[in-house]
Length: 462
Ligand code: ADP
Ligand code: ASP
Ligand code: MG
Image 1 (spheres, rainbow, N blue to C red):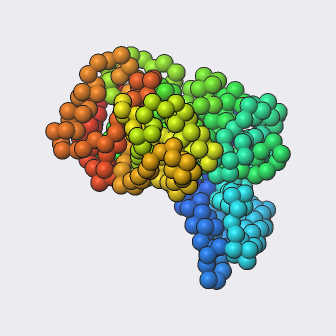
Image 2 (image 1 turned 135 degrees about the vertical axis):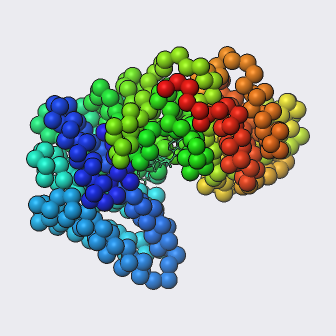
């Protein structure tokens, strides 16, 4: 079971988490728990670590550390009053370490990817001992572990590492013996390379941690506890009448999370799918709601389109040049230049004249992409590279689209009628996803139009 930032935001939230765990513990379920940082803490750590190397003074550290102390000590006092003497000093020690590392970043005026990873993991490091103590307070034995101790071994890409196959055996060895006697409380979001270098798994990475751990211990089920009733037909912050989907397939959730559904880390289904483990998404604040169940093959569903997502922070890169026509190897040169710099390409389209290749990438990768492509310009392999930040990607997801003709027609007719201009279209070979690119300001409207077109706010299958 994984609990997200809102679920552990303060002592009263943690009390709900412990209620849930206690109920399962009493039934005799063996439980492993993954926790993320308290809501907002990772953002604060990212913000300060990137700001310090260019700050005029270190005063931000003197503001952050006391505020983290107050927040975590208040949470500890409320969630585990009998353990303040034992856990208080651990929190104090971690805050001291964090303060020292932040002062070093300020003095050196340098933030390496490795030190950034270490700093931003402190939200989880501060919180997990509190959740462990809150379990003990209710008489449930717990063992607090960081991601490396739990056996999560990763690639070395700092900030977005992925689990490697050795994980399963290590996790089995480290977690299985604990499960018999205690509840392991594992810090999400982090792991380490086979050489022992510390890494993080990317934003929302504690989802991924939970799935890696679940697959590692061959769990019967993996549950994500969050602050909404389940995975919805669209982001409820964009579409106010979005509805909870009772059941989705692994494939659908992978497409949704990959194309920006903020509800889950893009890789969090992979490990579960590999071991065919049932996944549930449930609301910590409404635990009797059945939530969303995620399985390999769902029951037949009349719905063709299940859900929509929309990503704002993407950029388009248009690569032009007549030299590209009929010349083999140009695409390879482009993609290997981008891959060498770890630029993740989300969508690709090539005009039939071959004089143009358009890519959609994460907006944060745009500068690196431009640098990576610059040598191709100077070598005359391509003529021009045009960037456009003012774009948004929308994905229409549903396994019912596979082999069902006409969905594309319906999508683009509805958008055309609403006056939304579509700049680029792509359909994966799995056919469970049609994605397209629009101007950024048209993104929310495009989602609204399609949510209505496919009547996603109306219940059909419950
Ligand atoms: P946690 O901290 O529990 O991991 P997150 O904030 O990361 O929670 O993710 C849950 C949030 O994701 C919800 O509060 C909701 O606003 C947002 N969200 C975006 N798209 C969706 C969607 N399709 N279904 C459900 N929630 C979504
Ligand atoms: N705390 C991390 C983040 O904010 C991981 C997570 O919440 O899943 O991204
Ligand atoms: Mg999350």
